[in-house]
Length: 435
Image: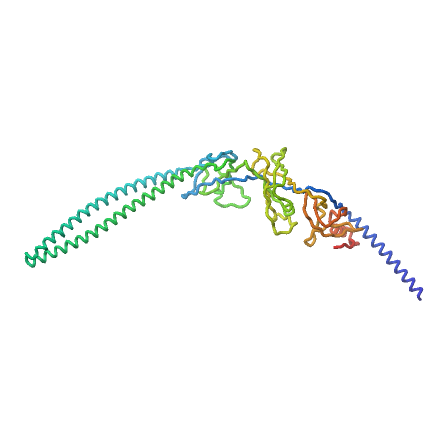
């Protein structure tokens, strides 16, 4: 009985050993069948670089707009050609001044009429004043005469005395009424003169405004630069949508006051504008050297320096989504007359040198659960290990958390195993990994 149990235990132990050996062989075979490309973690001195593209733009430009003059549309009679080189003070844009010249003539006529009305009002006031003074003297004389008659009342009859008293009272009332009338005449004359003077003032202001408007019909370049003609939004009736193609403004076009017709751009101080993601942003700073290739000048090399780098953000460090870009501006070391705003360029920015940097190919870094991981070769399989990426440079990820010499997968072995399983049907799974 005991011998039978011993034989049975020995048989089970042998079966377990054989099964384990088969399982290990299958796992090892699966790891080989996955055909996962690998690379080795390196430690070396690296020059950080950021590669991106951008476009040239001017640091200074001025808009040339139709003057804000009320009274309807304006007609272009002169417009500098697209790309013309102009100097400060050169005529860039002119509008038809006919309406404003008519307004000027009309306002000048109104001014002359108002001045004549002022002269007449003053003359009428002088005549009225003279007449009032004459009437006032006569009224006072009548009062004096009536007073003399009243002084004789003791020598005349009662009836004549009463007539003398009534005559005096009537003379006094006439004087009082005359004085009141004189006051009314003076106020009326002042009012008439004020109205005429206001007409003159209004006509003078309108005439000056017309003269200023005529001057505004000719617009000169505020700076030296190139002329760029804008698209004619007035031709679309104010209706515009993204992607819509508009014709440029031309001589003869009717435009609304205030419409931006053209722009004078300073080409003597160009800069290169680009955008970078958050990973590249972390290694950039002002003063770094940039090597520039302008596509329009393929045989030329340009140099510049980082002028400004966009500010910090609260997004995830690794998030290079297009919505999370940072503005970057590069100043050329030397200006070149052949460069023009809008030219596209490729640039390589040289960052800091990193001593004994631990790096792997950028494609070997994967994301799982919001963390950055790599798959390290451990025995017959691959083990996921979390790492911290410090920077990306020329396709290599500089990181922390790995030892130099470690073999890592360049593709996701878990995804490769799933693909093999779909191709071959149910089979052994990838060996256990430490997470």
